[in-house]
Image (cartoon, rainbow, N blue to C red):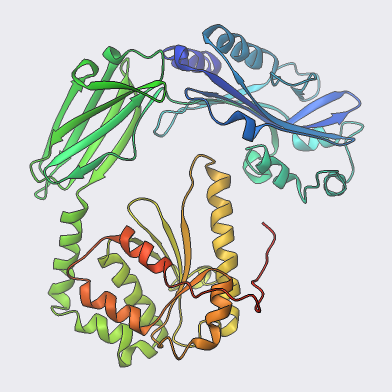
Length: 465
């Protein structure tokens, strides 16, 4: 079975679930016709906000767009067959097709069905980008044309991002049409271990049959003992929700540290999700820490005592403190090749992102506030560009062992740029309750309150998006 037939066979299992297709493309107008540089057809099982994503762009040599259309089973099959057979993007006003090399009439196909959730992606690859450049009529300076447009874009990559397409580095040398089929079901992010119960919440698309669903799980205990089980879909309590079937099943965990859940449809795995007992894991973190530092005195010394004057020691101590509060912490400040990035990235269980700097001097020493603002913007742009359906709350903050009074010269600058200043007084409060409370999301909200009031007489830094 070739790649395209394998893709057809895979998605035919749940073709009744597709209700929308989003067509995105960037193409070049040449004397041999309009040729696709990069395009994507995304078949969705739940309709997105199409009015917000609709987009059209055209200059003398470049055309781009993104448009959503409601579909049913028959139109799904016809659009898919048309794209695979012709290398053309459907739902656009003109004939836009992949170019082929030389006298070849064939595209190459590659199927990616790795990873979960199951989101099979079929790639049609045409002529190389260099071959496309050699076609008569290709603009010599496409970026200048983009910059002079009524709706200006600085680079081709920026236009690709606006259409929800990968940047030129990810596209590679070959012109590409990507066909993506979203999964017909998922395990919701609201699933959790609560007390002695694992609460698994799942959803399947309209047109799917609950009887073909199977929910499986593995329970991993402290002693590494593993329990395995599964249930059929008709054992799940289903309710109509958001034009889909929403179901909940409760698994007794028996004190397990982790529950790994699996959702399959018609014997094809479509999603998995790992649930942790956060309370038990945090208890273990504190127990391990207390074997080294029984009364947290060493941590206190590194944060607000004499040792806090040592920059590396202070950074490490802030990382440890955040970890004990339940953040997922990555400490980049100690990696020489990454020292242009933030000192610490800390993520809460709900996905809030902290972009943190540490300093033993004034917060804006060496332009630290401006750099931090820029890193926050780059992080947000990166998340939005890699996964448009993820909206992550982020916070930029600077930790310092200095008091609020000692950093007052930088309060207005931090406030006008939305940067929280976490000073000696706040760190001392955290130390007083670190052994009692381990709620990273609650601490994140508290940290937001440490952004100083903004002032109209000090201008914030402004960077292009």
